[in-house]
Amino acid sequence: MKSLTILLALFVLIGCQNGKKNNNPDERLQEKEVPDNFDIGEAKDGRYTNNYFNLSFEYDQEWDVLTYEELESLMDMGVEVSSQSNKKLKKSFEAAKVRTAQHFGAFKHDPETFTGMFNPSVLVLSENVTMHDIQYGDEYLEKIRDTWSKTNMGIKQDGVIEEEKIDGRTFFTLKGRANTYGVEVLQKYHCTIVKGFALVVIETYLDEEQSKETQMVMESMEFKKA
Image (cartoon, rainbow, N blue to C red; front, side, top):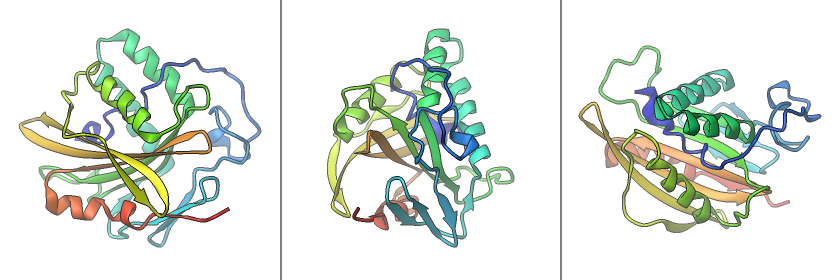
C-alpha cells in the first residue's frame, strides 16, 4: 500500500517546468524551482533539521526512514497510480514535480519487507508557490482537496479545515479518508507557508492508536527564530 501514503498531496498546482538548472550545490535540487540556498535537510539520530526553513523535529528512531531516492521513487509511483488513464492529469502532475521537494519520509515498518495490513507513515514535503497567489496554508489545502476529485483514489474530506499553532507558526490541517482494498485509511495534511513554499506534513494511519505515533513529528516541530 505504498501508493496510499502519497495520494499526490503536493502535485496540485498547474505549471510548467522551466528546464533551467539553478546554482544549488546539491545536485538533487539543481533541476528544481528552488533558491540556491534551499536544502533537503538531514535526518540523524532521531532529529530532522532543515536550514532553509529553520526547522527541526523529532522522529521515532525505530521507524524506517526513507532515502531521498526512495522518496522520489515513491512519488513517481503515486503519479502513475493516481492519474492512470487520465493523460491530462498525469501531465499536470509531472509538470508540478519540478516545484516539489521531498524532505523526510518514514514508515513504522520497512516497506520492502512488511506484510501486515497497513504500514503507518509520515511524510514532509514542500512545493514552491511563489508563482501562485497562495498566502496561507488553508488555501493550499483547498487545492489538495479539489485535486482529490480528479484522481481515482476515492479520497473524501473528513470534517473542516482547522487552524493550529505550532511553535508560533500558523498551520492548517485537512483530514481525509479513503477506502482501499477493503481498508479505511485516514490522513492528516498539515500545511504552512514559509518563504514562498507550502510546507506540508502528511500523516497516514488506520486508527487513533496509530495516529498517536504519527503525530510525533508535528508535536515536536520547532522553528528557529531568524
